[in-house]
Length: 185
Image 1 (cartoon, rainbow, N blue to C red):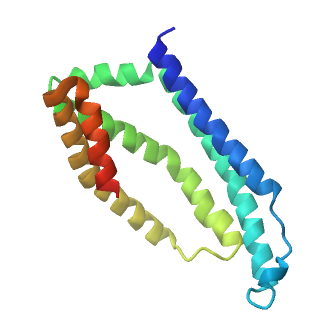
Image 2 (cartoon, rainbow, N blue to C red):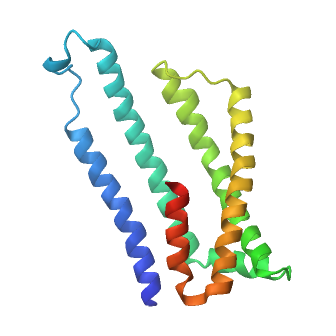
């Protein structure tokens, strides 16, 4: 088996397990009774509601992340990324355009797959606890706006990253890592 594949799979599965353990430890210490230090400063009923919301939200997050893990592992192990790469390269465009199409398809596909999870979280879980102020119209508008902004900001950023890799070769990852870190800060 390819050493890079082993590193990638170990990293993906390792982060998944780390998230599960962290959430488990947080939920294990979850208490519905308002701590004595906060009595008189915070409403006990609201505190209990927030703890129940946290528990349900975390459980739903586990389901969503497990689904995502299975999907990404299938894409890696069954050659889905390679198939998409070959498909995009068959258009015959320049490397930057091919890269943008490749990432655009992956990002849009991820967004489409995530819509049912987002709908359930917003209109079921948040509604159940009285946190939802979003209408269906607002939800759709926000989704379209996020796609638009992701396309613009992500497209520019990713174009730059591809350009850096084309120009700088082996050391490009260092420059991209530093650049993205600065950009995020």
